Image (cartoon, rainbow, N blue to C red):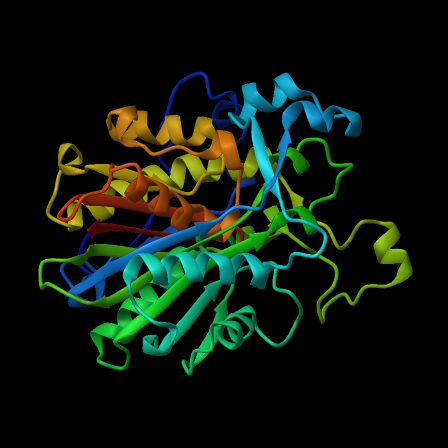
Length: 368
């Protein structure tokens, strides 16, 4: 690709046994556009470090076997997704509660007080309410004076929020930025949808960003969106376009609707392309990547991407089997667990990949 060029991504990569890739025609999906500005300083955010991480998972564990009473097939869930269990928020818990708990753990690990944070960003698609934002609710409970706002890019939300927070630090507008991903997906998935309901879990994760060494930060990154694919993954009811009515509730319009097979093919095709591109633009090769932190959507997507990129499967961190798809919380939960497990050390190269509804995506190579 030339500098500043726009190329259509059309390759399909991954194991041959991924029948969805073979079964779906290209006409069923929008042509993903990846805009590349190779070598531009806008694709690097250096001098920024992750000062600490934290996560929170609700106490209730829902195993695949527990879903059989809803008509779900426990073996099918494992075979098709790799998920064995997920967490469910308690009836009294809202998205801001999970976000607050993750934030507390993150600040504790950073040894930074809440009043030293000067920006709070929360990535979520399941806010407590239309307004105030989850970020403002978290800010109040933390006792922080920081400005606060939400971002909604669904499963790519944390990637978008991370880059936004780094940009605030790089421009000198902020010194300490708390970036949180939090979602309670169990509230927007129809229990009668046997193929979608088992995929999602509830949780929150957080990182604290701050100015740091010049060789730390994002060596390269890309954010993207393809609105033409928005109908593949959407919650049609409840907004200004379609306010909820008794008829809408009865029809389940308040729940997520997903064309799983089409999203699967799009994700495998697109993730391989953007991941290879950001690694190349970081001036690295795949063997130099110490850890892959990918949105935890489906184990077969993780496997397909690892094979397509030629990355040792052991370098791909997986917690999907325990938590399911936690949407915007997915990547920060993985980061926190990787740190706790000793799999993420200062100076390591981390490939971050988010993708989801919108359609949106975000990827980058982080020098931790």
